[in-house]
Each structure stands twice: as C-alpha cells, then as structure tokens.
Image (tube, rainbow, N blue to C red; front, side):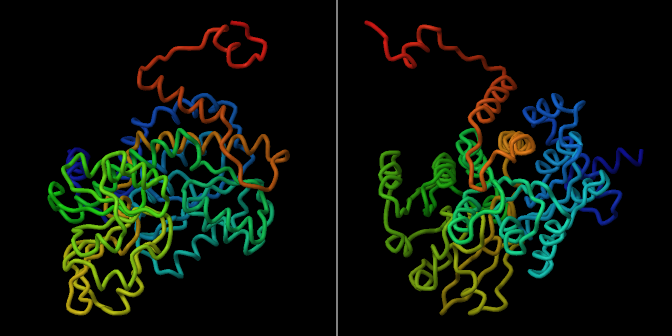
Length: 425
C-alpha cells in the first residue's frame, strides 16, 4: 500500500527530500525515457555482451536529465566507468542524480550551485582521468585544454555553441585530441535542434509564464535550426512571429517561409516576447532595453546566458521582483522588463528539455561516436571531425525501423547511373 501511495504522489509531481524517494522518482523517470528511446536501446543491446567500453573512462558534461541518464546507463552497460558534471547550473534534475549515484556513476553536480561550485565540478570530472570527453557547450573541453590534462584520447560535442567554441580553441591554441562534432550530424541537428528545441522551448514558456500564445507578437532572433523550430511552433499556436537575422540567406529563407523579417531595433517597441536563438553574445543589450515595450518578456533558447545582457539588468536592479518561479521583473528607468530563467536556456530551466524521442537520435549519435573514437583515435588527427556518414545513416535507419517505416532502395542500374562515367543513353 505504501508503494502505491508513493507512486501516486510522484505522478502528481510532489517533491521529495528523502534520498530514497528521490532515487525511486529518478528510476521512474529513467524507465519512462528509456521506454521511448528505442534507437539507443537497440545499439546497447547489440554491444552489451562484448562490452567495448570496458577499459575506458568517460567524462560527461551534459544537462542532467532523464534522457541523459539513458545515455549514461547505456555507456555503463557497455563497460565504461563514468563521471558527469552539469552543463547548466539550473537544468539539474535532483532525482536523476540520486538514480545515477545509486548505479555507481560519479556525479559532480547539484541544483543551482554557485558559480564557483559549478566550475569546480567540471574540474573534478576533468581530473577523473577520462579517456573520452562528451561535452555540451565545450566548457569542459576548454578546461582540459587550459589545464593541459593528459591521457584524453578524444571527445564529442553536442551543441552549436560548443562547436563555435571548439573552432575558436583550434584557431588559438590547436586541439589536444580529436573531437567529433555530434551537433553537425544530420540525424541530430535536423531533428533535435528544430523539432526538439522548438517544442521544448514553447513548453518552457508555457510552464513558466502560463500565457496565451495566440495573437501575441513574438520576435525570434536567429533563423538557424533552433530558430526555425521555435518560430514554426509559435506560428502553429497562433502567434504573430517576426524573425531577425544577420545572415541574408537565412533572412531570405524566413521570408520565403512566410515570416515577417525585420531589424531587431524595429521590433523592440511592439514585441510582446523576444526569444534569442543565435548562439551569439550581446543580441539584446542595454541600448535595446531603452526601446523595449514596457512589460516585454525576454527568453533565451541558446546554450549560454550571453545572448541577453543579464549582467546589465542585475546591475541596475539587484533585487528584481520574483513574479513566478524563473520569472523576474526588472524596473529599468521606470519600465518593466521581464526576464525568464535568468537568461539561461529556457527549454531546460523552464521546462524539461527536449522530448525523449528526439534525444534518442542525439544520444545514439553520441554513443556511436564514442565507440568510433575508441577504435580510431590513433588515426584521427587532432581536429574537429564530422560524424562519419555510416553512423549518421545507421541512426536514421534504426529510427525508421523503430517507427515501423520502410523505404525504397536504389537498383543496381540507378547506382551505376550516378557512379559510372561511361553510362550510355
């Protein structure tokens, strides 16, 4: 009877402080996610007996969510020893931490740490002597390069922002080991960044604000894959969506897709809600705050909290009014500016992150890329590498199979038509 009552309370979203209760909740979260992540489950089952990661230590810096627990448990099932820190101080799910620790995974994280604690936890993972690093934002990659930690055979990177940082690191100092840019896999960014972040960003907005989307004027800054997903979901809910861009090709694409395209400064007086999706810094700054509509909401869907100048807001208003959890109202020169999730990534801080089915694609790419590094690190140059096409296609094929979808194949004649130069007509 006690277990039934506990399960019922968890289903209602009641929070627990007891570590055993947290573990049980984390276990349920894991089971929910793994039941929807069929691709990574099939990959794990294929390699479970041979345990190809048995002699490897893996260091992870990811959002600690139920989906991440599926990736870590898969790597553990293949024999790896694992340590993990959080890629975001506010996205940690405490019940998942307890579940992972129970399963002998070293977790260096807690919810809402100080800045010092946040980076100290990254250093602990860096100093755990990992052979392979999997990062989300490249902060852990940057730390191990700065500290010149040895013994790292290779790494992977999950995000667009992280790819930019790795390219910067490469140009300044060079890379100390090969890194596979998992974010650039077609089966990742076409779906994760667009459908996953698009949907989960809207969920984060609805959960934090509880506002009606329909009829409101939303400004989406950036029309990359994340911006495309966010703007498409907003339009589907009846929002009036304007896109701002610096890339003429992307701006033209947004226009052709039926969106209003304007300069940011022209949208500031009338926009109800602004969502930054650029991966850049200083997108909405002090000068923009002066023009913003009174009562406007500001949210960020990029990885780092640099797209909105939150530093200026807190400097001007050290104790903003807490309207709701993760919604703060700043009084700036007599104007109300509402910041969501402290300018950090809205879909994870305000929501629960991307749906399990989408993260299945991303984390399957991660797991297969880790396996690829273990076999090929000696032959890979110390550079940023694309996900091998075979991995990308394998993930897509397993995904189609899990959806019960079958597709056609080229005939021999069709293959020859495109591959042979001596085709006669």
